[in-house]
Figure (tube, helix red, strand yellow):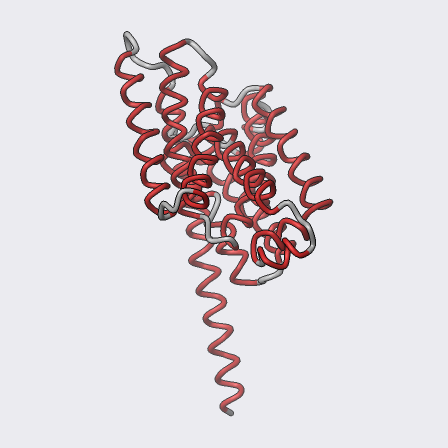
Length: 278
């Protein structure tokens, strides 16, 4: 099956749109996660979301909506425990990580029968994305773009120099909790892309690749979006052809891009050292 043939199908067009908006949202939030070194926190929130999905299946709620509420509360809980209660951040993350997965597994097993489409939430299958999902991702992307255009400097001040931010009368705690909520929402709305198991990678691998070429925050975001969307396109095509969850190929492609980019950068650095030596 050729790529142009796939473009004629509505489900594939929806998947491309969903991939584009998810790449934008993950590119923005993922860059913040990487530069703030919050990768472990994003992993904790990602896996804690299973608790909301399990409760959604059991009580008949929308699993994505339930996962979003659960993830936001988990993100706030991690921030509150680590900053206000003297609990080590890694301990707080591990607690909510384990708690969310335990609650999710309990409710999934309590649900009579087999939970429908559970593998789509665990491993991702963006070919099943719906129009409402696309709208949610589009709105999220637009909100994140506006927020970072208007308040990007303040967000970075609060992230990297808390004392300076306080001298400028910036609401540091509000900014931190708002960004944690943004991370949680982005994670949940991107679950269909690569699934809970692999979602942490899409928030880190494109950003790591971009960071090989630039340390500028805005340029990192733009490169992350491009790399993420490229991985989605390749992953979607291979997923449709081989009938394998899209998340596996998306992450695989992005890791290959990272390794190839790292090799190119290393070779260029070696050539520059050789020229200087001469």
